[in-house]
Image (tube, rainbow, N blue to C red; front, top):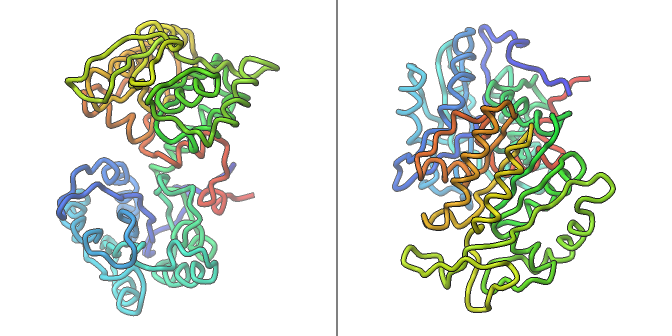
Length: 401
């Protein structure tokens, strides 16, 4: 697909409306992690350096109407430091006052809009309400830039409505995401291995289904592994698994390794405990011997070695989700081993792509460096949709013939 990019835009003297993907974690008005903001600094500076004024719009959290604990205002001083520019604030993302502030901007100046989700039109299921907000947002600027890959799978007013009204372009960060993740789904170098885990089976099943067709090996952990084990008839004790997805799990297992489909690898041994606590007694058991009173919280040593051996022979590795209940250190062992295996494969020439909030949190929590992977995605749901082959509304609206 051909997306219009920043280098194709004439921005001098223009007002540029940038859909950012900040959504930073905050506590009591204090920003706890600036990673997503830092990822968009190159795009913001590019726009300002090319003679434009910059209008920033983003969402924060999931407010139900106006809720000031989700206000964008605390971002102002941080943005000023990042951009070495004065940043003014608009108390609403739309309205006459905001329009006046936007029109008063001079080249090099920055305006930050209040949380988009304070406006009912942003996520409205009524297309007329979304369209009305999109028109108000588009009136603020001459050009639109999308750098919010984390939200690219959403059909929201700021993502899909605005670029239908004014010319739209991809930001630098979203270009990196599209190009980086594209290596996993557009003619990837084989063998291709998917490492997939996490608590939400619903979001991971489509990824597995897609990689059954384009991949060679699928290594599963967490709730997904438990669900597949249960579908195969194994007792999983008190482990978390999704009963609702047992039929789909059985279908995947029936296709595994047949008719050119990838092979799904299930755990052969697991670490079990009565609860996920640091002081809990841990037992290593075969998956055929999990008692009702215990639950699975990590892969066992045999499974960990098998999974790592598969990664060692891979040429493309996509990883989303820690393999165990990593928040407790004794259940983070297999995930740590996997991190080592993927990084060693990368050093041996494989393309490695990792992402997902919990995956990145594992690396941060245990001080595991992320600079030894080919590409690190800052997205969660959008990454899963992209590598699942699901249409991305905010990207599709920008496609040029």
